[in-house]
Picture 1 (cartoon, helix red, strand yellow):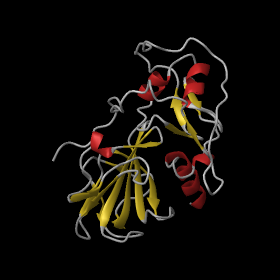
Picture 2 (cartoon, helix red, strand yellow):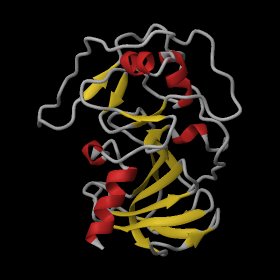
Picture 3 (cartoon, helix red, strand yellow):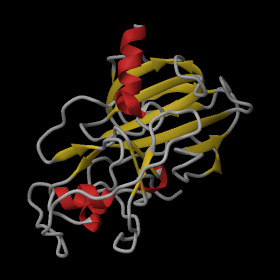
Picture 4 (cartoon, helix red, strand yellow):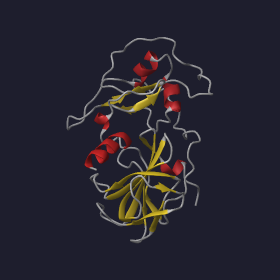
Length: 243
């Protein structure tokens, strides 16, 4: 069980354990290496920073993470955006490292051609996972999702149909946590629950009760809700209907 937890955390929570991403990637994708920049990756794949930003719906195009998998060729059925670079070759890229000596975050050399963040293409339609007040929004840095506060025991439901790929409390800071895989690109995560009502491998339907709100590994009662697109956190409010 512990081995399964470790492997899944490495795959689905890349922002926490980016160093785990070392395996092969599918054609048309690229795994970010130490010292890479978005500009360098674009040049070596004969495309542009703008295209890579759009294809991967990067919420912060100025920052990519070691181990992150990026689409470097256009999705099937779409045309190559204009302005793609026709040159190739290396660059004198620089990279930083964090204070703990972990994987560094590779910075793009230029953000001038990066468009404003856009919503990822159709792929999942989410319902609100619980009732309550949003007390913290997404910023992509200190907050990888949104926090919704309500009373202990408030029902938590699956935001969309899918398969439970993690149910447990093995990840520090998340308490009793569930992760549901909806398709090859999208995951949702539900943290700090009081009680879990589903198990790993179980199929759930949109709106099905999967947990109750709690305060495990938290200083208050709330649900921390995350959406991950191709392993990277993205703003849940982009997918949730207006209240």
